[in-house]
Length: 160
Image (cartoon, rainbow, N blue to C red):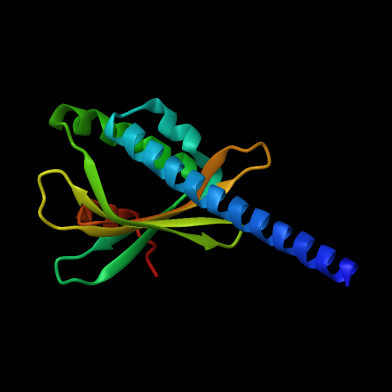
């Protein structure tokens, strides 16, 4: 009987420890997202280091008729586009506000979903990023989907 109680006590301790690790990682994923928002809204060059080199980047263009077109790109191309866009955005004091932020376990990372409201606009657009903790403890964006109403992104869409 003593062995059985010891087993259950050890099992419960391991279960609670595992649950705490998942809760800590979810909180860390949320903190990483908050750091991303601050870096993006302050036009920080640290944004580049927040993405995995092979991240899956999707800009989902919301067409005027409401249809959606996914425009996929690689990290290097996205970083070039980001640098070009930052100059004009900084002059206009452009920022994004995020609401309805949720964090959920997704594969070996966490999916941070939210609604993004561009400054000066009344609408909100869906966005998510999957952030993954690397073996060295650093968090990186491994996938990102951000809706946009900017129609010029359509020129980068796959023509099938």
